[in-house]
Image 1 (cartoon, helix red, strand yellow):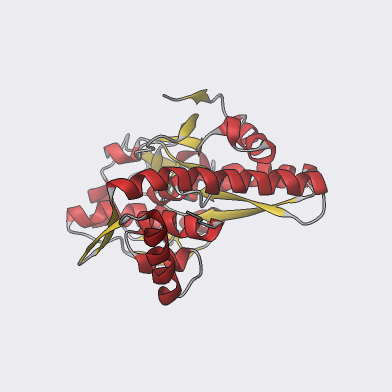
Image 2: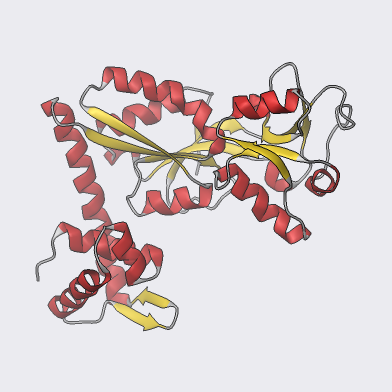
Length: 296
């Protein structure tokens, strides 16, 4: 039985995406090539690795056993690549950091310092919703993540970075400025929003909580960064929902009363001790932002 690294990456991708088509996209193969590789793996194993359904595929018992080994091999290969690149100091390897909207401003300075001290390492900073970050870290498609601790983190190793509640940023003369809290439903009914660009993790979060309320966030404008959003709020264009720590002194942050808005921010990794020196260093830098603690 002989599987190459691409076979194993494909296996992980097929399981995580729930289809051979999705797995093929992740590893940049055509559907025909991916299907051929899956068939060859099953022939080599002598057992079916997937159960086929109308809506996709799921791993068989044998497939689950192979998947555990495949994830381990893929992760170890990534660690080896990073370590060798740092030792060589030549061809740069890449650390992929997955962040939700709240995590971008928190990690940017640490990433810059990391790049200065690790000349042989590049960093790819990718914004994603927290649930997608968990899936990609588990699948080995990211090295570390900064995300909301309210999502199911599975078996990921995680450290708390402290509370990161969401608030409604308003001008001091706004009708909500003197309130001790406000429900998301009231904001949707009574205000127009200024927000981040379509598809940003925070905007996806707000939309997911608006749908059960039978509503949809109404935006006057969208911007790519929090600074631009805050300037628009200060100018009276609308209100914005942002992490409390991003609201400057010239604006008022009115707490959202909804449970999902009372969240912690965490840094997560599959296994810090086995992640390789560059990844572990960056994890430790981010952990130092706030008095973090290891979570169970």
